[in-house]
Length: 401
Ligand SMILES: Nc1ncnc2c1ncn2[C@@H]1O[C@H](COP(=O)(O)OP(=O)(O)O)[C@@H](O)[C@H]1O
Ligand SMILES: [Mg+2]
Image 1 (cartoon, rainbow, N blue to C red):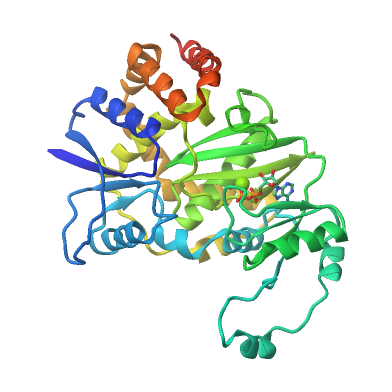
Image 2 (image 1 turned 30 degrees about the horizontal axis):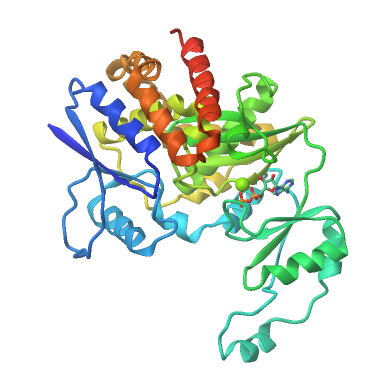
């Protein structure tokens, strides 16, 4: 039997090539069959057309509506497996994610949503607004949160429109600049000990030390012990909880760790950046997890879930620790973690070696050089080729090469 996986891509070449290569090298899987991959293009589509793909990985639909609606169609009508629910992804942006996680008791910093600075360009708006939108005192709202704070769009991503605000003058400047964007004011977590970015792919989560102030290639730091074991587990649980709650299976979560507290600040990042030049050392892990989870979902005929069953989560009571433990249990049930691990052991036991061989060999090196060539200006290429080669060699060594 041949299974077909579709890729819906933006401009990236690196991880799709890696994904295709690993799947090809993996070959047919006992009792499951053979896997093919295809890069998709979306033409006008009939709503009754039958898709040929069993699973689609998407990195495009966040920005473009036509592929987004195609994804919703194949999910709603044909049960094609998508790693992120296009329904929640569209309707439950950062704002809703904050609301849900606050309700579940997570330590989300104080957050207030303020009305538009410039109302939408619509003739009827002033009349309607006069009825529902009373004047308010921005300084007072900010004063209650306290400075410094962050102003950021309610549906943000990629740092668009994010600013740190230290006083009233900066507050008004940032608000004036926000224009027609709808903004949150959020208390800043100051003087945190660590910034953790966790990348989740299906049942697996990688927690990485992150330095947002650095250029892209230096943001993820290779550091295996930057959190205490309990904080590390808490970060994993929070990422899994968000993902199980919203049916996001390819997502990243940002948490700030201060003392013994873990504060989640950004976790609606479905289809996050997984470029070789940003993940470097962690890139082979991401490709393996993407291959394993895709194969697992197709092989076990895992069905997309359009329902959310939020009350299973909301019904959990107890102390913070007790609730986290129960959230973890619910999340692992959603991700079928045990079944996934068993499947990987029995059907994909040879994947580690295949990926290690590939990363240490010439085909991967070509991919690395091509990616750097496409990403950096000529005078920086040699330096970055060596930089990333070094990190990937380290990965190969750490993994037994
Ligand atoms: N409450 C906060 N406390 C401290 N830093 C924050 C806070 N909110 C945002 N930041 C900083 O701003 C960056 C961008 O904000 P974020 O909420 O992640 O927006 P985006 O969705 O655009 O990535 C974060 O990576 C972090 O460095
Ligand atoms: Mg962010």
